[in-house]
Image 1 (cartoon, one colour):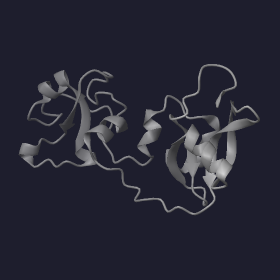
Image 2: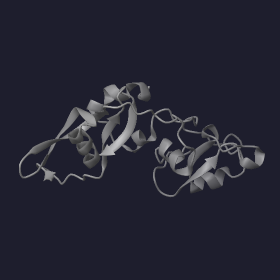
Image 3: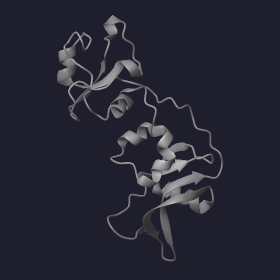
Image 4: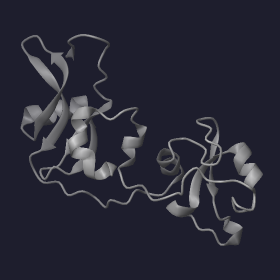
Amino acid sequence: MGPASGKPLDLDAPRVLVLNAAYEVLGLASVKRSVLLVLSGGAEMLSESGRHLHTPSTKIPVPSVIRLKRLVRRGPSRVPLNRRNVLRRDRYTCQYCGRQGGELTVDHVLPRSRGGRSTWENLVAACRPCNLRKGDRTPEEAGMRLLKPPRAPKAPLFLSDLREIPADWRPYLEALLR
C-alpha cells in the first residue's frame, strides 16, 4: 500500500485522532492501526484526511478521525508528572526568559531546600542560564518573573506536540482546549 500522491505517508506516525464510542478523546493512533480498525469493523471513520492508500485492487481513504465501536473507558485524566511532560506542557520554552529548545532543565519554583515539592504547580522548564541565575531562591528573590503560572495540564499532552490542530479535530477537542 502506498500514498496516492505527494510525499510518502508514514503509516506508523500517530496522525489519527481516536475517540471512544461516547466520542471521548482517547489519543492518537497510527495510520496503519486506524485503517486496520476501520477495515475490520472495530471503528468507523468520522473524517477523512484527503489522502488514500492504494492496493492493486482498491483505493482506501486515510482517516483523520475515527470512533471505536465499543466503549473503551478513558484512563485517569491525570497526566503523569515527569520531566518530559513538564517540558511538553511548557512547550519546550524557558518559563523565565522565553528561550526555546536548547538544553532545558526542570526548575522548582520554590526550591526543594525550602520545602518546595515536585508538583505541577511548582515545576517549570528553565534554560540552564536562568536556572543557574535563580539558584536556591524564589523567582521574586532572584528578580525574575515566570511567563505564566505553572498548572497541571488539562488537555492531553499529545496536543502540545502538534504544530497545528487539524480543523476536523476541533469539534471533538473543544472541551479539552478551553
